Image 1 (cartoon, rainbow, N blue to C red):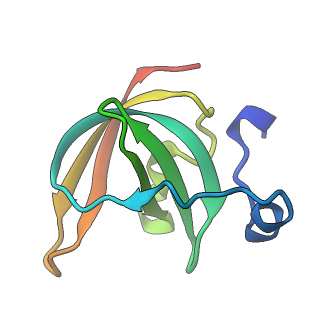
Image 2: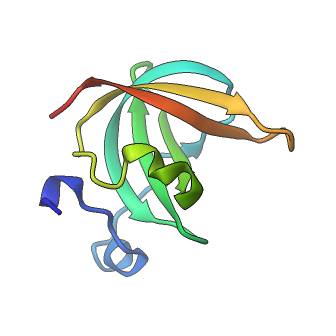
Length: 104
């Protein structure tokens, strides 16, 4: 895997003191555009995706193995995306699909 597509481990994030306090979980359904900023291990076979939306919001989105990670696992940091958020039967907002606008 090239370094531009790295998924940080929880230990690496702690050791590097990566601050993610500016990021919030996405709680809105709809279509958005944004840029992939960082990827990190999550819990239960997931990865956490850190994005900056075009409106300036910084969001975190979990992506799961059963979604085939939506292609994020090997996606380069800096990739420009169209993001489609939906609501689940449990009333939770999740990233349903993406379209790559511009690859890095």
